[in-house]
Length: 196
Image (tube, rainbow, N blue to C red; front, side, top):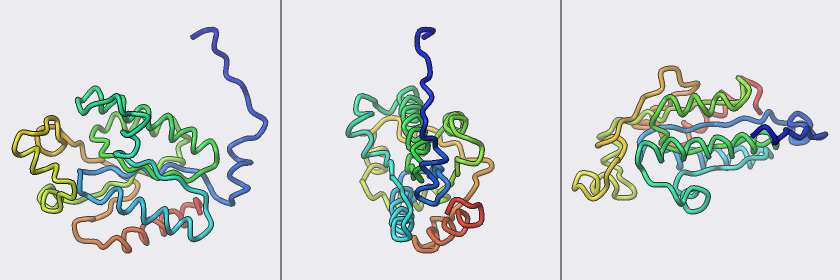
């Protein structure tokens, strides 16, 4: 890679973000399947869009239809999935955008790897704290049932580990809080920390 040289750009992340009057960042939703990641990320994006901010939502299933369609669900593939998402999110943040990312992202090391791609204040880790039994009870895609029946291998929470964030920037009790309350808590955090 010694023949690849970074090309500096005249228009910077700061100048892009100043046009939108926002501080670019990556809001990284992590939690078990069924914990509300996509639902709350989507609702947050709607609220930020309503307020006039430039946003983009990267959703786990949607990204696996394109960029990551060649990846399965082994631990190795999950690591590569998160690496690719992190690199893509980094580009969006550089473009001055507030990015929401809804991925189970079960491993702490991979979440920290993504955090390391960004400036220290550009990564907001949001832990969707819903107990396994609540997530399994919701089972919006029928995946827990398939995992329990042995039809799906390497399913997080059943036969694949999930490492709970030790110091998430925001922890949402999505087992009991309604979506609107979760969004309000996130907006309050973003306002208090100068993102919006």
